[in-house]
Amino acid sequence: MAIPVVDFGACSLAQERAEERVEGEQLRALSEELRAAFTQVGFVFLKNSGITQDEVERVMDMSRRFFLLPEELKKPFSRGSFANNLNHGWVSLEAERLNPSRPGDLKESFNTSSFHPDIVTILFLSTDFTKAEVPDQHSLNSGSMAPLSVQLWPCSGSLAGFQETHASFFQRCRELSLRVLRLLAHGLGLEPDLFLRAHGLIGSDQNGSTLRSLYYPPVSRRPVKEGQLRCGEHSDYGSITLLFQSCDGLQVCNHSGEFISAPTIPGAVLVNIADLMQRWTSDRLVSVRHRVLLPPAGDAGTRQALAFFVQPDDQALVSCCDGSSKYPPVKAGAYLSERFRESYGQS
Ligand SMILES: O=C(O)CCC(=O)C(=O)O
Ligand SMILES: [Fe+2]
Image 1 (cartoon, rainbow, N blue to C red):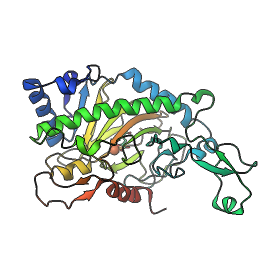
Image 2: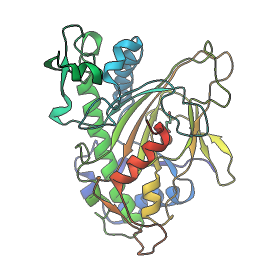
Image 3: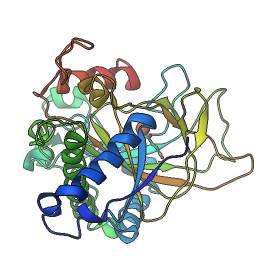
């Protein structure tokens, strides 16, 4: 079944507080369209969301400049380096396996997960280190280091504005996600703020929501391992995901278990249900597996995508909203950590 396209104009971010103003028949119709799509297909394109193609391209352009840097200049920003948010930062090629039975994904990404002022963490650097280099534990223990603050966002040269560009897009995605979550509760006949109450801390270190900029480099000139993909089969972990893509390549699993290519609709946002939302709604809304294949042989193209993974607050207890015990209650933060252990290995 094709991915439905829904006109989100009535709740567009271009309309201030539209989510409060939309009511009556309009509210019923829009939430019903979303409910039907998320029940049957798990994915929906929203057009007229208020997030424009220009905004998307600005973020992609900025992150591409980072991805094209030599490896040693990206390393200091690696995911796992930042004590207050271990998911923030750069993920190198093949570091993640979204399908753990395949080799590492042929993609790089940059996760924007934290805006905590302490993201500028104090690290200990000797004069031998360049400013953004992260010392190893031995050097730290040797005591020969002077404290110095390290910028944990790329910011020099053509990357001036990297943090602001990503942070403001994060906030736009947050706004849109909250509108979708409200409509979802409405469509399911639940209290209108049932999901919203559990997403009050997006953008803080008590919530795992993440803007992930993905870069798929050319594969035509590199050796590819058997079974390796740009992004292995998986379902997302949290409540919902917003996805913006530069070109085709995504495939979504249908009812018969076949992966069907999803189109790219410029200016539209692709939204899908993720695993915690499926648990929360006792399988009424479905979290569907998807993947990104390698490009056809000889195609030297790159691919970019922006995924905004919406995650309930770490301490939010996700339990079946119909009162059943189909899934045991789980704290959203603990659930996310477990899923990361599977995709990044135990290291
Ligand atoms: O690149 C894409 O289009 C999809 C990426 C994805 O599904 C993910 O990172 O979870
Ligand atoms: Fe995904």
